[in-house]
Image 1: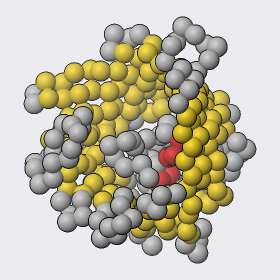
Image 2: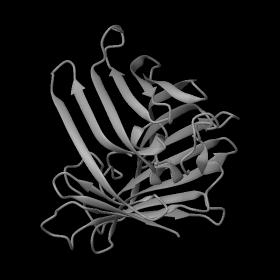
Image 3: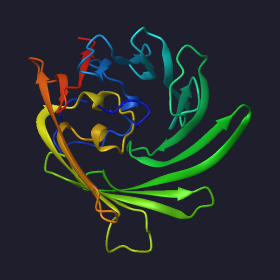
Length: 272
């Protein structure tokens, strides 16, 4: 599915009483996802990557750790509340994340972090992005959010380090609160046509990533249900993609396994 370097996740609730839950990390959850195993090569089922979700004593997400088949850690995300309404998410890797390969067995080092500031109603006020090399920290960009329809995110604005609008994304929802369409505008002076348009279809089962919320404005994580089809088209190049997934479910309705069309799979492990 979507592992850490792509990123970038409550129980199924109805749109009429849902508050957007962008600050779910502040409240924690007794039922939670604790690990996913991603089998990338159907011909080699013994080879997989694990992502582990570690929580503190209050069931708040503390770390997301990614490891290869032999358990060697090569990346992690660290969650820290720097004050009552600001969550810092640090990205640690063994080598620069823009490298073409992953170096396992090396010390982890922080390369970037985001500071997300929440409003009192749990919606996000803003997110600021930084890169870090040794002792140097550089401010790179910021994101603001617009809301409607019961505090659902309807627009995300991304700004450069000097405050200029670089791009924005608009979201549409179904009556269950799932994101059905997102449109990315990178030519901000032309509001007539987005650069990339993506549509989503869903099952009716609860989304396990909602309990950890790795990134609150990524459709995979912000929707109550699980994506079964994703169609995307670049309206400039006219390049399109169409991906589909199937799920196997636990008796309580949560996914136990996600299966790709080419045989790849992802397994979900919970604390109960």
